[in-house]
Image 1 (cartoon, one colour):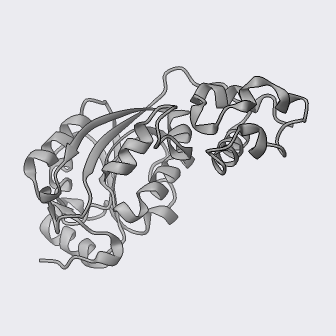
Image 2: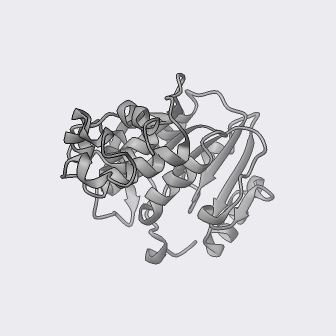
Length: 250
C-alpha cells in the first residue's frame, strides 16, 4: 500500500459513487486528450484509463504514489509524470481536458496555472474545498466574490456540480468539498489585454470594501476616476464591467 502525506495535502477519495459521478461529468464533454492532476491512490485513474480512445497523462509529485500507481495499474506506465504540476510544461501540443481531486493546499494555484494555459484547456472537472468552489462560482454582490471569481469567469463558465461529504475521503478532511466544472466561454469577453485585466482586478480587490476610486488612482486619470462607476466597490462589479474598464486604463 502507500502512506498519506499531510505535507502534500493528501486526502484520497475512496467513495466509488463519487468517482463515477466525476468521470460521468467529465465525459459529458468530448475530448481526445486528458491530464489528471494528483492521481494519488488512483481512485479516479482506474476509471480514466478505461476511456478509449484517448491520449492520457497524469502528473504526481509523490514518488511513493508514482511507484504504487505503476505497480497497481501497469497501463499507466509511460503516461505518469513524476513532477510538480505547478512547475510543469503543457503535457500536450494540442487542446486537452483537465480532471482531478486536487490537493486543497494548492488548489487556488492550480486554477491560476489553468488560466495560464486557458487557450489550450478545453474544460476541467475538479474537486475543491467547498469554500474555494463557491468562490470560483460566485457572482458579483456575493461576500465570497473576489479575484479568483472574476479571473476564472472571464474565460470559463463555472458550474457548481455537487458537494462531497468528508467521509468520502481517507483521511476525512476537516472541510466540506465540492466538484465544479469549467468550460471555455463560447463568446469571449473583450478586454484591452489579459495583462491589463489581471492588473485591474487584483488592484481593485486589494481594497475590496472601499470605493474603486480610492484603490485605482494609479491606473486611471483623475478625470475618469470622477465617473459614477468608481464610487462602487470591487465586489459590486461584474466580470464584463471589469473587462470594459480595461480599455480606459492609462
